[in-house]
Length: 191
Image (tube, rainbow, N blue to C red):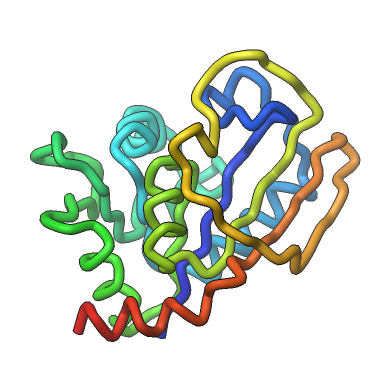
């Protein structure tokens, strides 16, 4: 069974919106991200993240790290409003997102990567479909913006399975939901 792994850039005050304004990247961090991409052959995105990526990645050439992967990889968008995605290899998930994603996990292939997409990440966690959550915690407080977890988020217990501090001050924190064993039952229900 394929795994679903998500990673997000996040501030100390839990903001995930507009990372291009505050992200502190270095080559070591981008190397870790490239390793995650190499383990994946599918990208799963929420609508907002998809639209942001679709507006910028197709303009980037092969000389830009990860652009070939981003532009050529199969992409699924969780959206009730997006009708016809135009970015190469993109399709909208129709119907129940949890059921559709559970079916994707059963397909042959490498892991499925979720990049950004806070609402989608919360949905996957709520439905016991997320296998790993990796946060790149940036040493900045921005004060306002969309947060990864909001007042309506369900409680979820996570176990820290890895961490790494980068020279930029960013800390990578990798978690597995402790209810990950429930993933199998969710996927079986989708069959």
